[in-house]
Image (cartoon, rainbow, N blue to C red; front, top):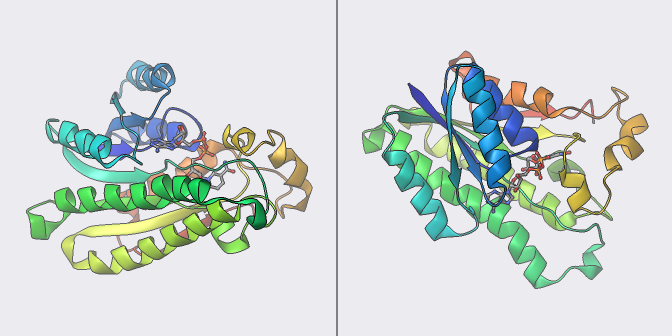
Length: 247
Ligand code: NAD
């Protein structure tokens, strides 16, 4: 059975992606940082539907925890075939002149460094040059990398810009080693993340300015992620799906 790791999968887009990957026959590693009970609920829902999954704790901003997670995956009787770099953070909405170094470092530690290191470990396991069987990496970026998130969180937007460059560069680096690397850039999606930015109702506030006239659901993003991860996208690498209702 093929193994898929989804980071930050206890809620939101990661949760929806874990459920859809399981429905598509993957054994899913449901990574979480703190919400153990919610991660366990995702695992139980997958099992109720006849799928296979297990929860795995790690703060991907902490290299030691990240390495322990991959070593734990090595003990599985399954090959790591898919990595979905979904974990991401943002903080209270503000302007650039209000940012401090500690916050910027924290955002980049998860969204950029954590994603880089997960990619590094996945390539070591998937790459045919390392004796692997190939695989697929999907980075969950954001429309913010194109738009810049002015007045909200330019630090977050810039971290997603760095992720986009990682997607492009890594896709070319490993194209000959059986690994495809792609990205989904969601727009305004109904998840708990907006409350972390201090505005739980953010999606409804902007909905009328979205060409499709509404915010998106986590399940609609999961569809794009799982397609890119799957063999159905076998000729697609270094690509971006803008799932943002036309924005
Ligand atoms: P969310 O807050 O529900 O999910 C993010 C998950 O990542 C959370 O479960 C969080 O605990 C986890 N996480 C954060 N830091 C982590 C760390 N260091 N280690 C492990 N896990 C960590 O929000 P979401 O909307 O589901 O976000 C998922 C992804 O989609 C994020 O990368 C986000 O930037 C991106 N995104 C979301 C939207 C949106 O409108 N919701 C838009 C564009 C992009």
